[in-house]
Image 1 (cartoon, rainbow, N blue to C red):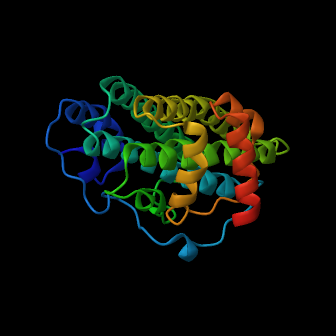
Image 2: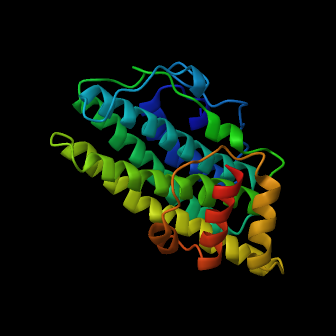
Length: 255
């Protein structure tokens, strides 16, 4: 059984690399409408209120939410490998590495939750990120949605979380988890930035023209993100100055 069909979160982590390798070889893998879960799935509007990060429960809840995001990022990596067998082989091999790294981030979050005296499933989760992508996406669409929009927004939010944790005396271990994830996510977003430009180039597309046009076309698919665009991290992750400026203007005007 491949990872998307496995409910237990720890078993998902254990099997993700093998599932990705199977997809890389072109094995026929099924994409379910929703990936299996061992916890309650609810629309985020129905989730219980959160405590502040000064509380251990608030820190655990934050890691739980982050774990849900990393879980979906891991699953979306496998989904892309299954849905785009025609993508460049080097892209697919690098995506396998990124996907396994998302699994490591998930493991860090789960262990952090346990260390705080809570457990996975203490709160409901959502699958909004999974539902953002569609079978009709082109490869360029998918790269923009997952690796440049969703994960790019994650850089903005992660930096904000780190700053919020700075003034909390007993949040050191939690802060280290968020810092490690946010640092490594720069590479994940850069993966998307590099391959977006490479696939544009090989397809005879000007990425400077394509980026705002494609983002505007996709905006109805994209969940709202309200965090301030982090220019420094976005530039480190391969965004151009023009792209960052466009994202800032779009976020201010659209949301």
